[in-house]
Image (cartoon, rainbow, N blue to C red):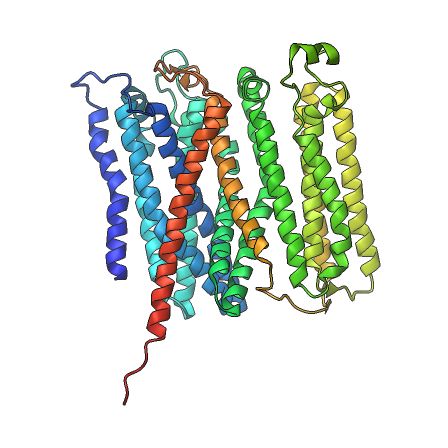
Length: 584
């Protein structure tokens, strides 16, 4: 049965490869005159490509993100000799085995739509990126081949030296997946910040400069972190799905623990994601100030208010999940008195971050206020206030997780008081420094605020998180335990929070994809190849939100189907184990 599944999956993976091979020859021929564009019925060419690309990228993010922590969890299981880690890593990988085929199918659909609807554009990209167009399907095939050996060989490579070879396969899976990400990012970033071509004719001049363009590395880092975050969120949703359907305390304990691990991976990577996103925006500003102004101060400006609401919701939800988690830990009640203060800080930061700079107002209101900026709260609509609010939310979340880490521990070292005071001093000092830079940012040149103050705020927050984590290692060495974690003793609302986090991450991912593409405006390749189709305009935010919502519904619907398929396999195993033995 497993062999048949494997063969079917490989046939699905070969589909986009065969399309690429057979159409690649046609790209180089000029026997027929290619049309500029073709129309897609009902929804239009752009929306058709948009949906296919977004759903494909969502599955690709999941397929590339989950193996990273699956291998780490498996390694922890090997080093600690705890079977539960190996079981969890295998369950992670089971989702990948099904999702890989879906990713390939949507990739094939996307390629087919691009070739048929935008033939001239694809002809140009194929001429510029010809070497990578052959490398990509080969890498994809290698990744799929490695994944199926990694998953279906789990039982055969369970012990001894073969287990280390199995870990090597997992490492290779991650390396190939990362290279795939880098190759695909070169195509995307070339369209935003082209380099290595003649800007007037579009002729190729240097293939490496085409690949290593201005925004390639910022996108690489941003997407790599985002994939880990997204993978953790989907794993958390899967665990919540299984928890809500579990019938035994043992299963509930396992999926509660699995959901906790997935959520922690998502949140910890999410804490550094705003820094990577800010770096990307900063690089886009440096490449072309017009593009940067369009992104932050033009028709896309209100998109960042929606982003603020979404990310703020994620911060609140993840912290609420942590606070609920303290109820299952003996000793966790000691820190519940601090929750109201952390919640107050988070809500204040949400209010600042979601405050727009320019209000949508009537002429009468403009007259009363003396302009489109509110005379009181308008000061919170600029980047100095918003960057400070984001960093405070990250600091507050880090403090909450520090409380969670030490919930059932009591420090026994003689210098415990000094280390606790040192941690408190670090957080207080960094908070004061971040606030000072935020206030002073109103009185300095924009270049200083963007290139110096924002970077210093980021470094200060990272220093606080890393240094206090290291101090905890010394503080709780040989610590006294107040009890244990009661896995499975979580209220059902905690599982709905995990599902909410996954849905919000997915929607946020789609929204940011729209922002990245919309800043090109009426260009296929920015200032190199103009879009002259009927869709050569930036869609409104409302229209984009509707398309993104459709993409999210399609993706989550398919993910639920994958979860259901996985549960069918589990039921089959249960039925087999409960089959009575024949009478002797």
